[in-house]
Image (cartoon, rainbow, N blue to C red):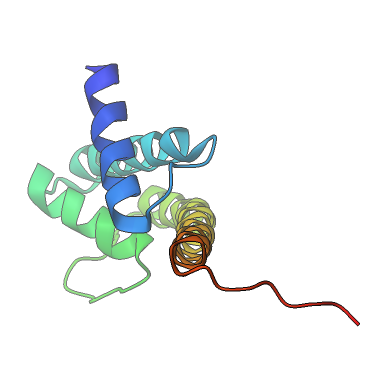
Length: 126
């Protein structure tokens, strides 16, 4: 199962960005899945919401959308949500910055490939 997930994430990353995922990217995505799972289970048992509503709230919270249709009502849930937001926003920043770097690397790789194919002369330094 671990190999299958690794293959799928690597395949998607390469198709999306044009480069192999950097070290740690797969682990970061696994951490995101774990954080979403923990949030879903916590809200299901603490707030009494269904798994679907708990998962929905977890995603909306980590994405910092905050529609307001669901919200924590207990003190424990409110404290958990504060920590959950800080962890989720930090994790989201790591994921998006890694993807941005990969997009730039992929673009640079495509430019170099085109320059080789077209035989573009290199600039001379003064």
